[in-house]
Image (tube, rainbow, N blue to C red; front, top):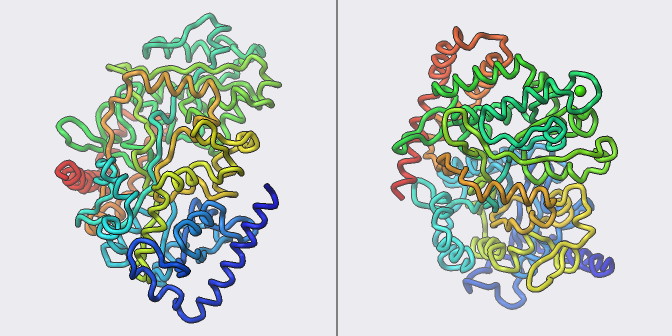
Length: 537
Ligand code: CA
């Protein structure tokens, strides 16, 4: 296997070298390509310059500077020679993209995470080409996919009716869930809460009953890896907090398709007053606002054994049930999953995987061969390409067993299967492709799968979901001018209300007034217009 891999890399290096000599003649290699439509003519070499920079670290190159195997395969199958133009040592993907904007996007294809806003802005100025006709004529797999998924097609379509970008579409329904220490419940003789009142009883019992058994009142009944996620506890009082899988989007769908700002709603005030009570009573982690992100489970479970409950991603959270270091320190450690409760009505889970992420790729107006570019992108929607984008390379990362791709044990052994695939193979990078949840199921623990099934089989995904909305250039300007400052202001004031640094009863009205001054209602208006267009499509 090793030998085969080395050979493939050598081949790629040779191809890249020949592409480079070909490039001396300013793109002569591709000047007459694509005239046949569909496939490249026999022996014809089409060079595509790829600027994919994502998650502040990934390009299409591996650590040694070779094109990642999934992209090598895509190039081979579509008759393309790939050339990376993204800086592999640059650490800020957004800055790299802006740099390209100043150079007027010289590469053929641009891709990465969180590019939807920027790509739309520049596309409306003519920097990226509409793909509609290209898809119709040269991309049978994309065409079929969009026909079968009209909601995705709607979400991809810009206000002018064009598709400028193909986005990453995650799979799977449940994302985060409420997890409680089952070993603590057992120890205290309590059962999994099914109402808000039962949950409060449990959290106060975690605080007072010494469930970790060390004789000290050191338990932290509720914690999170991010304080923004803790604020979502407002759901337990019936208030909405976020509109989709993003802490930035706080405009939610209310009755009669009317949008409103969740963070200025009266029920949100009641919820924050409740969270203030919990904080002052020692129910919420006192360090919730200052803890380093993504460290709390490790610290409060593995290191200190003081954490009781959290609301976090199912797969990563349940992986602690099999964490050797943790089980050595806390042999009884056990997690149970709680369905959402609601003090003022029916429990609902607000967090879901996004229908579509703002990640993906687009074709520059400078692309010399758009047909080849769309053909390359189309491959990722074919059966073979979709499998490669999800699972990597057959025989190396997975084998076909009874017609299904099954990861090899050495892949499943990795600390993070996703990072391993991204870094070494280029699978799961956020390009335009449809994720297959089966990929994740294979590395999710039995506890995680049970939690996942419990959530998707319960009637809890009832909060209206705001689709990814496509703003016009003017709307984007309004949105961009208000959003960051408004969100930062809200984080600060709401945090002060929760910690009690500021009294919510006396401070709420001035908080709402200031939010309006900072554009909360302007953003609602922009979103409402985009949402109305979305519904009318
Ligand atoms: Ca204790």
